[in-house]
Length: 325
Image (cartoon, rainbow, N blue to C red; front, side):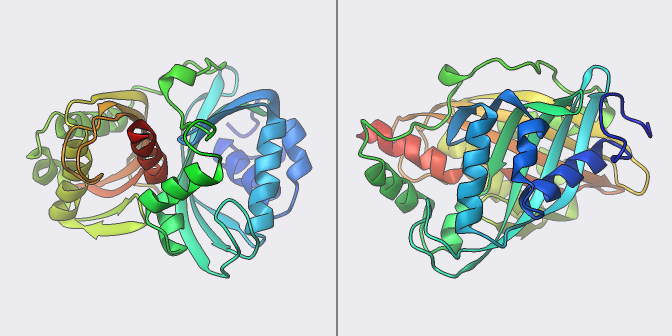
């Protein structure tokens, strides 16, 4: 696949394209390339909002770089499916470093150095991205700036003019159908990871010691690094216990076997339902919550050995606080 149909010859393959344009836009300051890289009417869904059009993407990019001028986006992995002819979906996991040098959505500049992850699912065809799902570890960012996710969400509601005027987080009610309607591929590793998460979400916590390497390293929202079965159990139990009656759905599933890489998987999923249990999100409030999640996994000889999970804790807290008025 050395020449990707419809894409510039600069790129040797799809991961090279995704990594290359990301660096070009953010670090090489090629923000204007977004006029061509992104379709004019691209739909970008993040836990915080749904944005339509690349003008909004360009504005958000500039605002972020004004606040974090030295931001770097280190592409840890691109897990992808599809073909250049029919369109390709990349699940791009990024480790970002940045210094909070400007005033902005995170308040007055603090000079603090940040490190956090992002997973961006992008659909590309004919050399252009036209559909995107983007999850940033807001919990990690705000904690490094001295906030709790709950307090940041409360402050954000106040700054945006109170519950009536604040921007409401993304829910399926505001979803816009974009050009990409695929669900990934049928590779065995995507199926395996989907099965593991479905078991966990069905309260089969015995799936964790059965399927995860005892020496597994896990990276969870809030910039949390954990090791072994107990860390996995604590994380997934805390999430599910908060929303015990929410419906769990996997929307996209990719598995891949690539040279020099462990077998790996990328999932995009959601939880929808009431906040009616004690767990990671404090006392139950009954708030209706939508959790947009994405995760990557790598497998080894003793099971799942690395897991990266992202959702936006501040967007979840914002939904909880807004429902309480």
